[in-house]
Image (cartoon, rainbow, N blue to C red):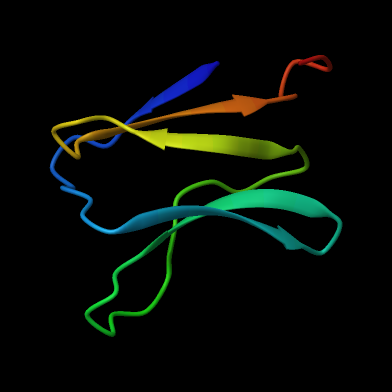
Length: 68
């Protein structure tokens, strides 16, 4: 699992993996009507997001190093 720190950004809502231009990227969705917030970008697949209990970090699977 790759881990990205979201220091200073408290996430509340749903973390989605969305297929876009041939790659899966992570987005935060706030049900209160806020726009989607992109969390990852690049030429790799980021999938299976899991939000930490305190809403401060997201763990996810990625093939950034050429393998899962």
